[in-house]
Amino acid sequence: MKTNQLLIILCGLLAGLLALIAPQPAFAGGLHIHPVFLGGDPPPPSSIAGGGNLQAIFAVAAKKWERVFRQGPDSWDITIEYIWADTLADGAAYGDEKLEEQGGTPVRPTRALVRFRNTETPNGFFDWYADPTPNTNAEYEHYESVVAEVIDPDFNPTGELINIGRVFSTTETGPAAGRADLLTVAMHEIGHALGLDFRYAGMIEQNTGVGLNITSPLPFAGAFVFLTPGNHIDGYESVILMSSAPTPGRRDLISSLDALVIAQLTSFEEPDLSDPPGVPKVKELHCCRLVLGPPPSPNKLPVPDIVQ
Image (cartoon, rainbow, N blue to C red):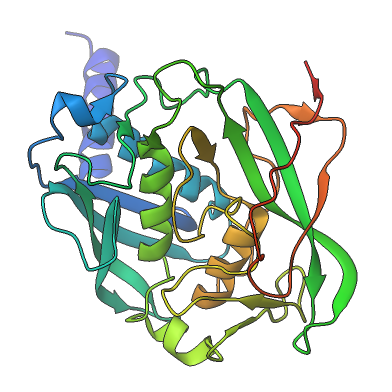
């Protein structure tokens, strides 16, 4: 073998060795969710439709939250274990969440457990819809984007508007109609794991008892957001993802207000409040939802025209 060829081979081997022993780069800035499926039997066929599986759906839900918090100067890693379970916390109909570890600077959730109901559907509740293609919204024919007026700490409207709902809905036919969307519930429970949990230091320190003040450098600094005693966002009916219960036949995505609340609780300075990929462009936003506490009765919005 010629000397030049031997030198080339030796240089290649040396480069490979150096790559193996060199320090590996840490995760880039932003949120990184590490889902761990603990198993459990799925619900009986009579209580779930669609053909999708929890692992694929939960992975999509995690990616949707990662997109919101993908940028920023620091990294945030959280492991979320999840399981089908026959017992949930009191008052939980579809799923529940428990914060298990938190830490770092600033202190953020680092480990949580999420459980999903796998029993026959209790009276008064709805069967599951497990989307076989959770990256799309093909089973939902209609979409609306809803905004509300921002209020200040004295509960006075400020004139600013913020997105509070990105809502897909379906008609009375099809597998998703009249069922609780498993993807919506997964996103909701991950939202609790990311900070809307009474065990979390950020919630303990910042919850005034009725709500949360948004502070600089976040967008909408000076705004006030109502929270319920059950760690949900209040005052915007049920269009917001982090309200208290899913609506059957509907898929609620992460709204700007959902993202803003988690960002405030966790001191995450650069949340992405823009529309996610894949939602239709609407000709007009629906405005305005009630902002001064929960509504006295449901108020169904008309479906907007959609620009194809």
